[in-house]
Length: 145
Image (tube, rainbow, N blue to C red; front, side, top):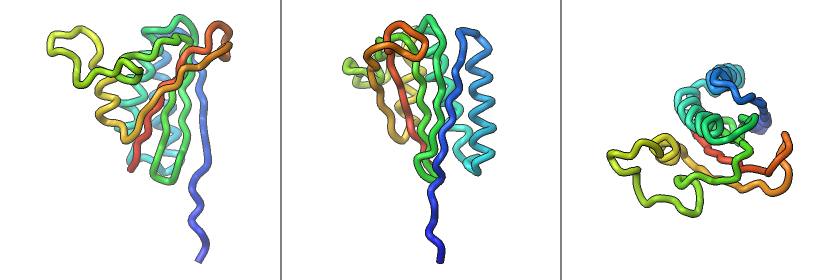
């Protein structure tokens, strides 16, 4: 009996500061997952990526990058790099204990990301980022089938 081989692939998509970029990134994500027979992850991965992409678009000044990586045949890591070094509260050291106050204007999207992701994290990136300037940050989530 042949050994089962886990998929080994990764895609990176560099995105400009353009309001259409998050939508194009979600379309790319759907296409990649269906191509690699991971269609069962599309809905959750698209929701999570959409929130991370919106955060990067809204709170950074330059381009940002979406990265999709198969961790196993049924596990996907979605990462978003941007040039803003601030790690937002749901992912950073100043993590809130619970959801935002009911009347809060902001902060729900990344809290939902944490609630729906199977695993999540963040990394501050020191030095120069891919586009110059500060290293920024990387937010990542994992989803399993």
